[in-house]
Amino acid sequence: MQFVPVVDSNQKPLMPTTPNRAASWIRSRKATPFWKKGIFCVRLNQEPSAREYQDTAIGIDPGSKREGFTVGSDAHQYLNVQTKAVDWVKDAIEVRRNMRRARRFRNTPCRANRQNRKRGGIPPSTFARWNWKLRIVKWIAKVFPVTHFNVEDIGAVTKKGQRKWNSSFSPLEVGKKWFYAELRKIATTFTQEGWETYNLRIGAGLKKSKKKLAETFSAHCVDSYILMRACFGSYPKPENEKVLFVTPLRFHRRQLHMLQFAEGNLRKSYGGTRSMGITRGTLVQHPKHGLSYVGGSSKSSISLHSAQTGKRLCQNAKPEDVVILTNLKWRAHSSPCLKAGVSCAKV
Image 1: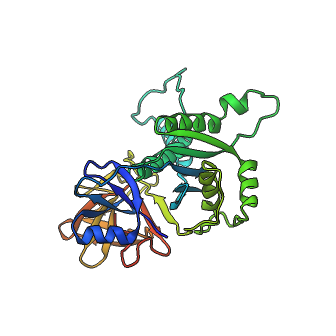
Image 2: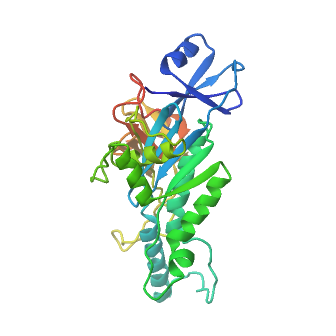
Image 3: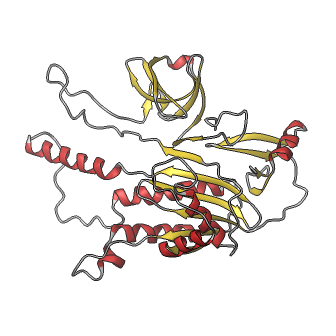
């Protein structure tokens, strides 16, 4: 059974409800429907009859390419989310470094090299990966009354002859420790070793798919489900195997110029976060292409991309022809749709 998240008039999350009850509230105007970046929710227009809460947990299965999140209580399983990991930052940082070095070699105006500078902190690519997980968790926690987290603890490979690398210096270890500290600020946090997750999954009679990039429940959410159930100590069969798939939008920040020369030995400007005055990633309604989000721009036109697949629909849309709905940081879709008869691309 699907459940609909509920919030009060002050946006505080309450316990989820059934679709039939949510539809009844909407018809009687006791509640207002809305989308929270891919999740269909209802907001009560009056004080709820009771504020009784059950412990609600999120199981988190980290991964290098795909990741799983499952929300549920001891009684029900509410939501499954599979996300694509942010994996492009390392390459972008390398390109930026090479471009900066090339400008120095060409005697091009640029800032001076900073010698003996202590950078410290979390490496950019590591921070981007773990911060993406935190953003997903905070998004879910805004519509579900989360009380527990259970994360599969992944360890770095120990380097030979460097005993302290695994626990102290590995970017993965530094990143996950920061992530755990941020989770503890929200709710009680537990960790589970990979072999423990495996044993629990086998004991529950569940199988994990070997196709890690597949958009199915058994790819990653089967492990996040087991991690969620471990918070309550019972392991029934999943009652909900529908998954919401989330893909982060990649925004190309403004560069000094494009990497390659254009015609006439000119370097065109590249990147930015706005197109003709509209923030890139903004969800809009277009008379021809329907629900889409804003990409780049050229001259006086903007490009539109599908809100479900990310495929570019056109490059010649006029800003005055679109109706601005909301700003997106990721696109979400589900198969089959989480709510029959309603477009999953709506937010």
